[in-house]
Length: 105
Image 1: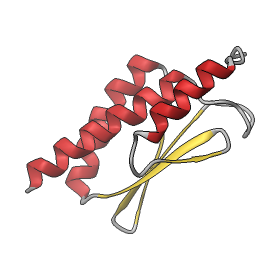
Image 2: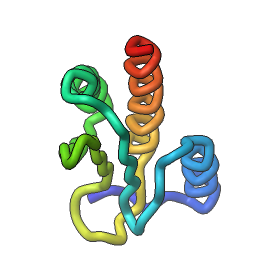
Image 3: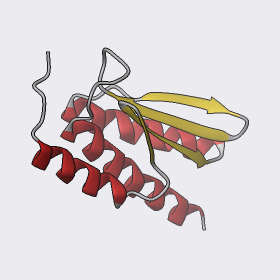
Image 4: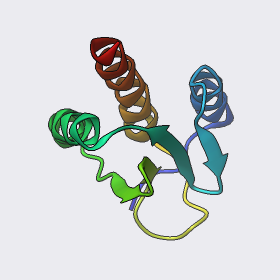
């Protein structure tokens, strides 16, 4: 069971999440949809696995109609609070996405 975070810690995570463009908070999860072709999707998911293992987060990644949908959440109930791991992984995914897109240009 995860410990409940203090108000200061929650504010820190909210502030960090606010800096991540394109990510939306919905209850105990954050989401992002990216427009990637198949090879870009494969590159992103391979890189994401390494970071996800390092921070101990299991992303839910789906491919649908040319888009990559990513959900990060704390396992358990829908109203669980995000941990620093989910926010860290989201920031790293954003960096990976920008790198992959820049390589395609």
